[in-house]
Length: 160
Image (cartoon, rainbow, N blue to C red; front, side):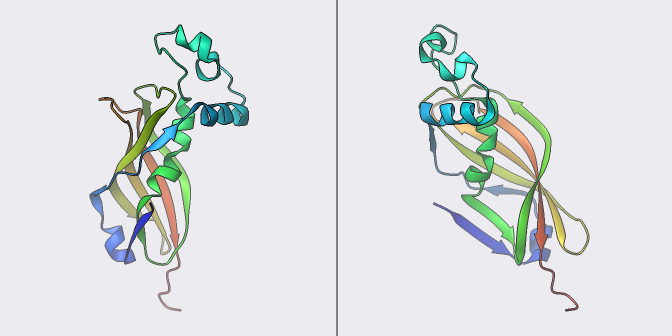
């Protein structure tokens, strides 16, 4: 379920260390893993061959790390905090990324995040730095932790 809170630009720009609620859980099944392998050409057996993967220390196929990373827009978009008059959000990059735990097939994952800082970039742009963690249901360690950069472009109507 998507829950979005809209803040005035000045209030949004003042955010620092603001927690965001967790997303819903999302099932990572073999069909999703196979579709990602098809899209990226990454057919390493630990992802797409259940019989061979069963003989590894993982005990089953696992999701590609970049599959888990690619789910961030979907997961983080479920519990969003946005500035008023948002025109668009642009993926701006990552400062840090660590894959800490493999995601076994048929696991469920969710994200939780903290807006660490918001920096004004001109009169109509905000650079948001967020720390995002993707948790695996029933596991102590997260799948990944990333410092994500998002550039928000707002329609600043001052002086118009």
